[in-house]
Amino acid sequence: RSMVEDDATTILDAIIIGSGLGGICQAIKLKERNIHHFLILEKENDLGGTWRDNTYLGAECDVPIALYSYSFASADRHYETFLGQKAVLDYIREVSDKYRVTEHIRYGANVEGLSFDEDSCIWNVRVSGGGKYRARFVISAVGQLHHPKIPDFPGANQFQGEAFHTARFGSRNIDHFVGKRVAVIGNGASGIQIIPPLQKVCKELHVYQRTPSYIFPKVRLSRAEEKIIADFPIVRRAAREFLRMFAEGALYAAIKGEAWAQFALKKICDTNRSKVKDPEKRDKLHPRYPVGAKRTLFSDDFYPAVDKSNVFLHEDGIKEICEMGIVNSDGSRIEVDTIIYATGFITNPLLHGMTVTGRSDKVLWKNEKGMRAYLGVATSGFPNLFFLYGPHTNTGHASVIDFLEPQSDFVTNAMYHVKEHGYKSIEVQESAENEFLNHVEQVAKNLTFSVFKNSNYMSNGRLVNNWVGTIGEHVASLYRIDFGDDFTLGGKMTHEEEGILGRMNEEEVSQKIPSLKDIMFASLVRIPVYTVMLASQFVRISFSLIRN
Image 1 (tube, helix red, strand yellow):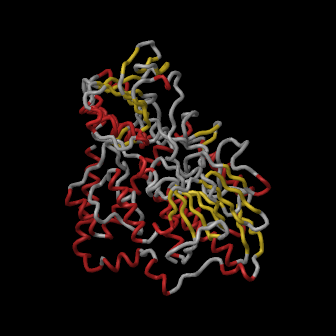
Image 2 (cartoon, rainbow, N blue to C red):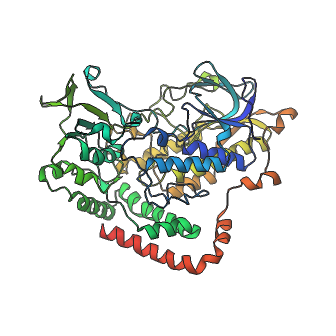
Image 3 (cartoon, rainbow, N blue to C red):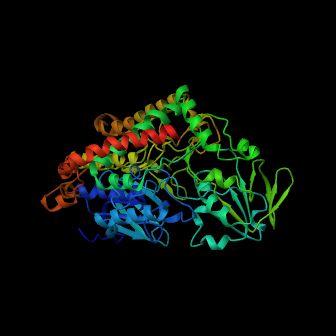
C-alpha cells in the first residue's frame, strides 16, 4: 500500500517508534514480508535519528562504512572509509527512498505513552498534542543516543555565555567560534571529534575530562582501495567480514580480559598517544584501566589538537559554573564564552520520557534494578512490544547494524508466528527472561564492562546496556529462538481477524532484500578482478593494523 490510514479508529499491524537506522531497518523487513499497514512515528520533522541531531563540528561515524551500513543496501557511492554526519544521513535517506519507507513516516509525532488493552490485544499509543494511534504490535527503535545527558552543575543557569549539548549544536559553523574561549566538558566519542576543529579557531580551548579513553588510530585506505570496496559487492562483503573478524578476534578478546589482546591494543593506543609531545598532557591522557571498560574510540587528530598551546586539559573536576565561566574543584576560575557539553546521552531507561503500561497495569521497568529484556528484544508483561537496540545489546566491539538486522528479522518472525497459529499476542515467558538475565550477570563478572560501577553500562551494580557475547552468538540466539518454549501466545483470533498480516506475493518481489546468492551472481563477471583486489585488501588492512 502506498498510503496508510492513520485515524484513531484504524488498527495498524504495527507502529515503529523512531526513524533512525533501527526504525528504517525494521520497516524494510516488514515490507519485504508484505506487511505494509504500519506507521513510523517520528517526533522530529526529519528522519535519521542521532545522525539528524548531531551536526556538531567534526561529527562522523567512527565505525568503517563497510560495517556501518545495511548488508542489503551498501553505501555504494560513498567511497570514504569513515563517513561524516551528513554522508551517513544522506545514506539513510537514500535507503529510505529506495525501499519506499518515507511514506510510512508521520513526523511531529512525539510518543508520550503506550498502554496495552488485554481484551483486544491492542496497543494504544498517545502522542503529544492529543493524537492517538492503535496497533497490534509496537516496535521501539528509539535507540540509546537520543536524550542528551547534561550534568547538574551548581550555578549552571547563571552562566551568561552560551551553553549547549553537542546534540543541540544546530546550524552553528566554524566561524561562530573564531577567537572565542570555549570549554568542552567530556572527552568521549563526540568530545574527541569536536575538539580538533575548535582548536584551530579558538583563542582558548578548555577540555574537561573525567576519565581518559583508549583511542586507536584509524585504518586509512587509499582512495582507489575505498572505491574498489564500494564498486565490487563481493569485495565489500569480504571487507565487512574481515573487519568483523578483527572486532571479534581482538576487541572482544580484550573485553574478556585476555592478556595478549589487552597488551596488543594498549600498545597500539600508546603509539597513537605518543603524538602528544607535552609530557604532562600525555600523562593525563593515559588510561589506567583495562581496554573495554569504556567505549574504545578512534581518532587521528585528537591527540595532535590537544597538544597545541591554546588547549588546556583539566581533570580535577568542576565545582560549579558561575556567570563568567567555570570554577574548578581546586577553586581556580576559568572564564569562557561558550560551554559545550559532550557528555553523552541518557541510556537508562531506554524509553526515557514515555510511560509504558502492559498487562495487568504493569509499568515498564518500574521498581526494578534498571532496564531488562530477553535477548534485548522483549520483556515479560508486555505482549507484542519489541525493542531494537534495546537493553543488553549495546556493543563495545562491533557495529550496531550487526544487531539491528537480526533483531528486525526476529520481530517479523514473531509477528508471523502469532498469525500462523491463529492468535493475537505473543509474550516472552518470565522464566526464559530470568534465565537470560542470570546468564548475563554471570558472564559480565569476567568482562571489562563491569570495571566502572557508575558507567552508563551499569545500573545498580548490574550490566544493563551491553551484549556479553560475540556478534555471532547474538545472531544465532535470535534465529534459533523456539517460540513454543520461550514465549506464550494469547488471544485466539476470530475468523474476521485472521487476515491482519499479508504474505509475500509476486507483486512484492521487487521489494525483497537481495540475498548473498543474488549479490554473487551480479558480480560473477568480475571474478578475475575482485579476486586480486580482495587479496590486496587483506594485505593492505593487515599492514595498516601492524604499522599502527
